Length: 78
Image 1: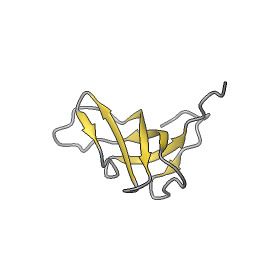
Image 2 (image 1 turned 90 degrees about the vertical axis):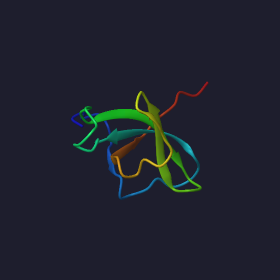
Image 3 (image 1 turned 45 degrees about the vertical axis):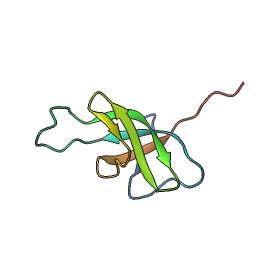
Image 4 (image 1 turned 135 degrees about the vertical axis):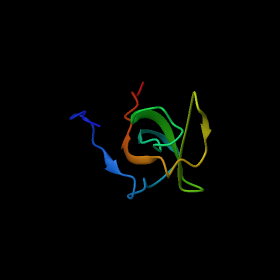
């Protein structure tokens, strides 16, 4: 998590507002997950107030326990 251009926010502070794409910083548990920490594009799900993402390990509909930080994604406007 060394990208100085990102505005990383602690996962203790949840996003406000609607469901949307966000950049998530994932830290995998030490046992059974051979992947180092990584940034992934995921979602903030407002209804259940959870972070979610999918990757080669599967789909994580409630990934709050894996997310340490998050950042807004600015999408281009047409």
